[in-house]
Amino acid sequence: MKYSALKKYSHFLLTFIFLIIFPIAAYAQSATSSGVAISVKVIDKNAKDGSIIVLTNKGYTLSKTAYDTNIYGVLAENPSLYIQNTEDSDVKSIITWGKAYVQVAAINGDISKNDFITSSTIAGVGQKADRNGRILGSALEDYKNPNPEAVGKILVAISPNYVTTFGNIRTNLLDTARNALDLYPLSQLTSLRYILAAIIVLASFVIGFTYFGRIARSGVEALGRNPLAGRLIQINIVFNLILMVIIILVGLALAYLILVL
Image (tube, rainbow, N blue to C red; front, side, top):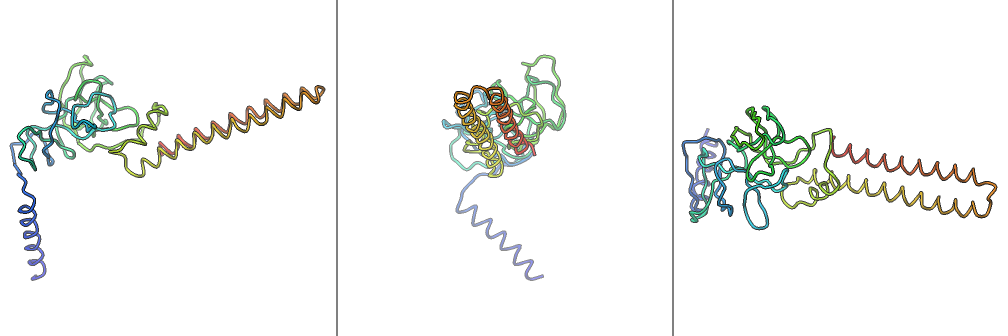
């Protein structure tokens, strides 16, 4: 009993000391979202409630591209708890985890509950995600609108991360490389998967073309020395060409499995 009481008071004392050493302001408000919002200086003056915010080398600003690899959070004007750790009044409250109303549009089709939400080409506005990449979170409400440019708001479970669960990978090698080398959001495991997949694809092409190049060169030399065996040599070259294609396809299949499993 004494131990539990001592533990309780020690936690209170540590919290009190922390608040003294690191002065911050915490505000409880009439909330339209849940989760803790932190103060962030957003350089884009057009940012408003529900806007998707990304972190760039210039600072925090509105998202402007689909599947932006630097999605940070969402601007929430009335969070349930707001922690302001700066005296600068020109800051916005940003939620990086929790629930918040997010601006969305039906650019990529109607949104159903539990669909992944990512950024879109409309500044600060989200859309349904249908391929692997960076997302903001998952929809907690449906959204339908015949006008794909119309912007509405839905409640979203905010949890910025990468998803690799879509079976149909439509990202190209450039997207894969960009995701793998991105500085901010990739977990170590996800980074390893992207890098390993890229290495396997590259290795399969190098091995396939190197092997076929040697066989083709030796086949041409043999054909010059023994023209009577030309048909047999040609069959051998075609066989090795097929083998090269198989090697490349196996490499691509392995890379695909690494990304989706």
